[in-house]
Amino acid sequence: MITIFGIRNCDTMKKARSWLDNHGVGYRFHDYKSEGIDQAHLAKWIASEGLDVVLNRAGTTFRKLTDEDKANLSKDKAIALMIAQPSLIKRPVLEANGAITIGFKPELYEALFSSSR
Image 1 (cartoon, rainbow, N blue to C red):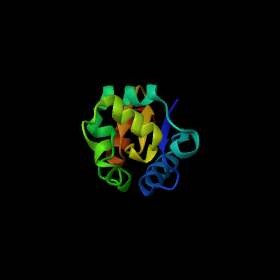
Image 2 (image 1 turned 135 degrees about the vertical axis):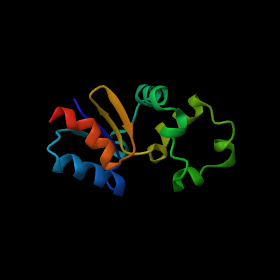
Image 3 (image 1 turned 120 degrees about the vertical axis):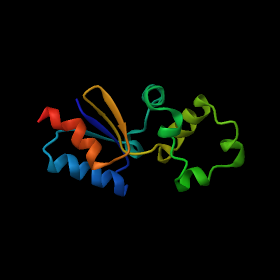
Image 4 (image 1 turned 30 degrees about the horizontal axis):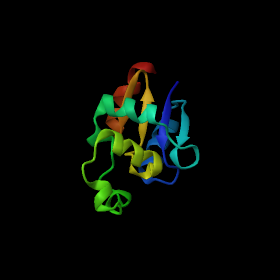
């Protein structure tokens, strides 16, 4: 099963979903805003890709955090923040073919799905 995680109105999400649709890749879309996200998924993504890849420090949501929230940002603290504010998670997160891909670049998706077509 292929699942893409993100936020419906995010421009990068729209590009990724459009790429999947245009290449005939079936998937399930999981919207963080309406469905939330659980600790198990976040822990798995961080274990695979690293906290710095999963946590979106460049977005306005992170910049609006208090200095206290940003200080001493451990994995557990970051997971709690991402559960409370899913916009802190980089997107999209794609779980496909046993791999986790974070962010969207057409060439990454092409490489991931070229063998399955």
